[in-house]
Amino acid sequence: AHGRDDFSSRIAVMTAILATVGALFGYQAGDTQNNAALFKNNAAIKKTEASNQWNYYQAKSGKQNLSELAMTLPGADREKHKSEIERYKKEKTDIKADAEKLEAVSLDWDKKSESQMHLHHRWAQAMTAEQIAISLAAITLLTRKKWMQYASYGVAGVGVALGVLAWFHI
Image (cartoon, rainbow, N blue to C red; front, top):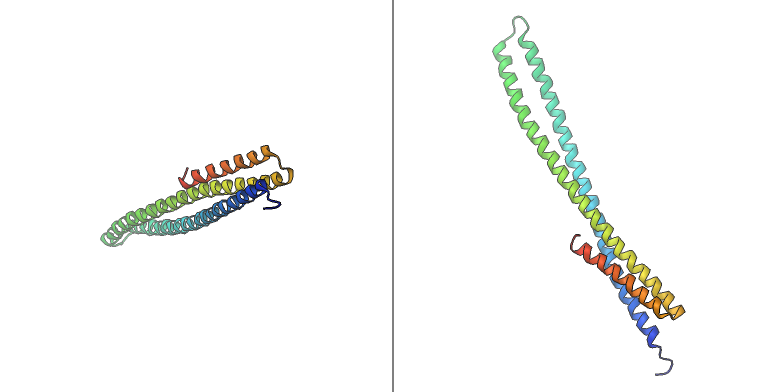
């Protein structure tokens, strides 16, 4: 076994492991970012649907107001307008409930999006730490400094800790 360099071999294996772990963290970071965008889009869709319901509510309010005004006109069919007013009031109650439900769903999607963005940042931080650890490992190979090797291990450990936090949604 001529020219065997155990130190370089260990650093090379460590670098390969760090690259693999970093790639997994990078995948998770991208996945959570995509989820966050999808959830934010769902929130916007529900918010638009709620807005449409509120516009519908306003239209019914306008019709109700016209019926109330028409009741006061001479010769108006008061019973017809009175029944229309009651119908508009009931329709508005249902429309309002639908709008509020859609707003709640929108808010829920927003919260899910924020949660995914938090996880995305954790995974991205973990991936960045692994990349820094790989850079430190390369410097370790060039300088052959033991303390640099330990610094690389330390930063890699921070990256793994961040990955664990992301895994447990912390």
